[in-house]
Image 1 (cartoon, rainbow, N blue to C red):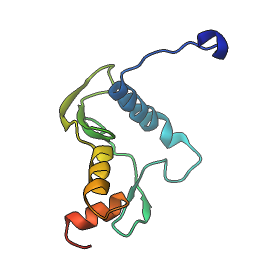
Image 2 (spheres, rainbow, N blue to C red):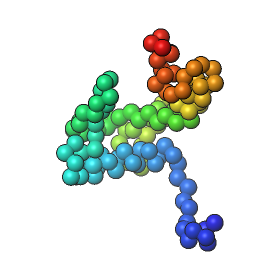
Image 3 (cartoon, rainbow, N blue to C red):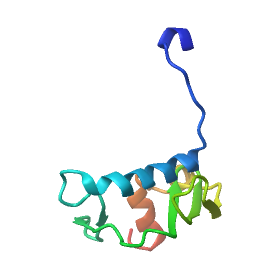
Length: 119
């Protein structure tokens, strides 16, 4: 594998990579040519609205949703200065798979609509 691709694979911890990526964006995202600095929020009607980076970044919470959910508190930019404060093994992928198997939902949005009684 290494010879065929001529590359070295380096294992990284997933949550550390997420934190490092956010810290990279916080440092360099404001220096982009984009007027919104890469930070935005999505309103209930689905529209993007640019946001300013907060003056005081730390501490902040990161929620990573995939096949599981992890909730992290990031205390500073120091290497490894975060802690997992919660989460579950059941994440978005598990939820959608179960929703598709047990209901008429074909999408995450349809499953949420069923959950709150809109469908």
